[in-house]
Length: 134
Image (cartoon, one colour):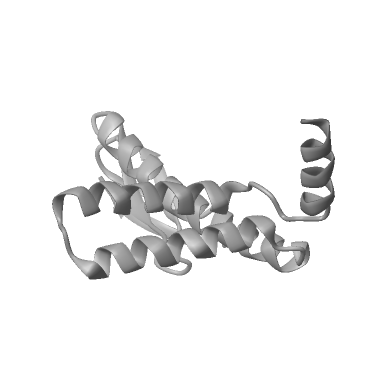
């Protein structure tokens, strides 16, 4: 057993290993496996196999710089998606006390207190002053 651990350690030394993109691809591969149980189609099986090969190739790749760039790109895209859904959740959660408006210049979404009337608002991102009717 010790010989196997030593051999495995030498083989995996310098490999990329498990990161966030690896886990995401593995979950998608698992979804394809479950989908393949219900839809017996060769395309689903081919996609599943190809995704598993790509996932394993990423994990055992020695080019850690390229894999790190791929992972950072995935993390930035995931952050945008998570931020969008958090914003939608907050819009629903605070719909009675807050009003959401876009800045006409930079399109930044502003969270304003829900007070009736016309208000002058300054965008914190670009500094633009504009009127908002709530």
